[in-house]
Length: 402
Image 1 (cartoon, rainbow, N blue to C red):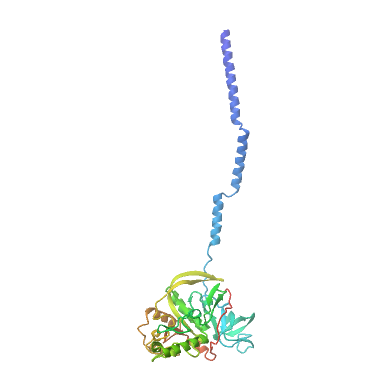
Image 2: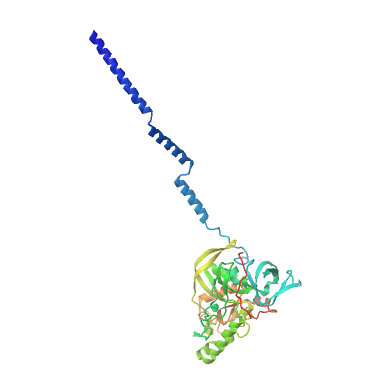
């Protein structure tokens, strides 16, 4: 009996010991250590901080988005008007002694008279008049007697005035002494509107509109006008005439090509004042466009020709001989329709005929003796009472962004 009580007491004590040990273990499991608590707190703080800041991938994404927005090209905005860029702020030039009036009225008081070749900036147009800025002063000029710089308003075209740095003039393929491969005059400068060096290529305002029409036709077929020369100083032309005349007297081949009936020397280079000095003539070729880039000038965009390949034409530019003639015999240059009855030479190839079509459609007339030369007889009639003698050079522009 006593033995049984002792056994029962032992079992109870054992159970109490096991229960105590279990309670200690359970308490330890429920109470983390100091390090674990600290780590848990830091982890919680870190998690809170991360949740309050954008993740690295999110920040990178937003940065990339902002960068993309910053680098997006500006929206194209072609100018809708007479040219590719407005005439406002373009360069103009007096072709004669040009009166500047206080108002757009020929009876208004004359403030000053610009000398031939003097540059000004065009401010606005009002009928037959331009308001201009000259030396910080403003006034009005009749624009029919004024030149406008083609690159300022038709930047898409290709310009290469070889006479300003290395003349192409030859006759029957023979170099002309003191002319071929020489600079005949200086007419290239920094163009503020375009932001680069560019040739000065002026023509009468009426003629400029027709040249733009021809360029617009060419662009439709991925072609461009390659403009070699418009205005030419009379001194340069006189030099070419004198040197070619001397060469023809000495060289039978040159004589046969440039000064033998039905063609005479003046058909290729005039001793007197020509259409180039008066501002309504252009020497131009045609080229296939290889590359164009969109350029922005002030508020407007223009697709500008950056690379091109000139077509094979009947002769090289400025070959002064019968090899360059358009028709089998001379045709008066002052009749707008006489050339239509003339017989084409078989050497007039397809590119030359396409070039002629562009200019005829634009209202200009081909010159019988040179496939590259076209005249604007409408402009000629407008300035007949006050023609330029071309006794000046043009070496500056006065323009700014449109």
